Length: 118
Ligand SMILES: [Zn+2]
Image (tube, rainbow, N blue to C red):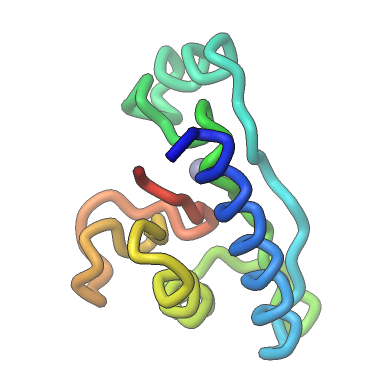
């Protein structure tokens, strides 16, 4: 499958995630989606990211700002329902709050991040 085909599925999944959030009382605004190599390099150099293999570089990741009761939140428990739903949409979908899909808050946590890892 071409990268473009994966990107199209990912984007459709994102639309479903946005609707799911809305239906469950959460409001979203976009953070970053596509990221250039130059921007990723800056993040690695500053310690914000640890990899030059980010799915943001492939248009297969998005970061959301999440609002609950009008307040911005990145709390793991607040975003876990979104992560759970995201993983049901495609077998390759991963939530940054639970990279290894063990339902535990362990390891590197990036709750605003939703990606398709192909
Ligand atoms: Zn991200």
